[in-house]
Image (cartoon, rainbow, N blue to C red; front, side, top):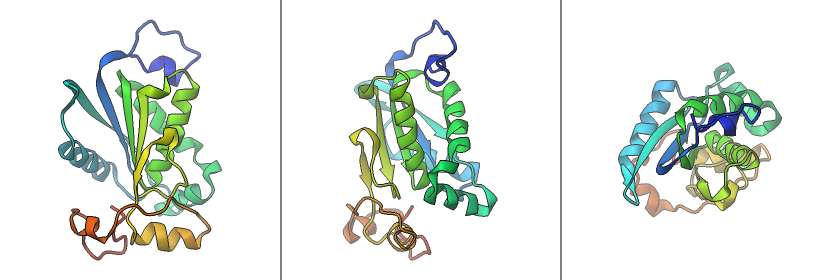
Length: 195
């Protein structure tokens, strides 16, 4: 498997990543079951194409498990020093799933924080920066690794009400009310605009 050398630099592996194709890894946020995260990955694949530049896109899940009825995940968001276990778990999942050189990490909410860390890990361990990118959705983080792109809704009650009160400074909103009404997440819920 091509990713072995990237994820486990101490192992010698003769195989290399395929030059053809792309892998999109979706990393979910807190409070998602594996089935919900898998459904979100499928929705992402349905919203995007199955090919790009005449090359196949493969969609994979980097499952971010919920801990202690979300309390553990909120602690990880506020104090990221506690997130190494989940980061290692997601990297282990990717180890067997990623077989292309070109990788897009799509993180939702806390998953975008892991996408940043995975980008940094991969590029630090030999993956060329031009082969990996990050797209963050509803990110509580203050940056997107590799100068990636993000979308944060201006009235996201999770990001701009709850987290700011906790002293977290997310990226500024770049999606408006018009974008909200044109999206599938336009219901008035406790996490309005966050999905």
